Length: 147
View 1 (cartoon, rainbow, N blue to C red):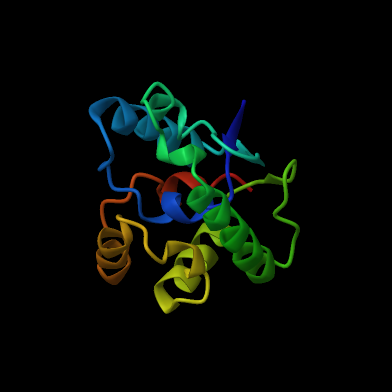
View 2 (view 1 turned 90 degrees about the horizontal axis):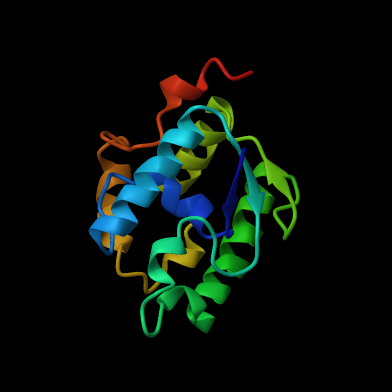
């Protein structure tokens, strides 16, 4: 199977530790993190994705706001530059251990964090990165044997 992600969720998955907007959101994201750890590939999509799914029943889901679209644009540009490959609608990405490590290093150093400005989770993500990505749900060890 393939996991549908909007571009800024490529950054969010780096620091996901099981916290979220609601129990349904967290349960869904835990499942996505497990699938990523097992090596499922990613399809870049526009707008709400597999992570957003539990939020779409809310009266005004934040994933439909222009700020989320701008985060996607910024994240896509940063990740595209980092990985030297297109991160556009319809692009596919195999998140192997090497790519995950490279993205986490860049996230810790700051060059791929333009999309994080103003995000309510920014402080938590910074703390997770500063702690060496301890307790993150997408695990390198599970990805190590993929390639």
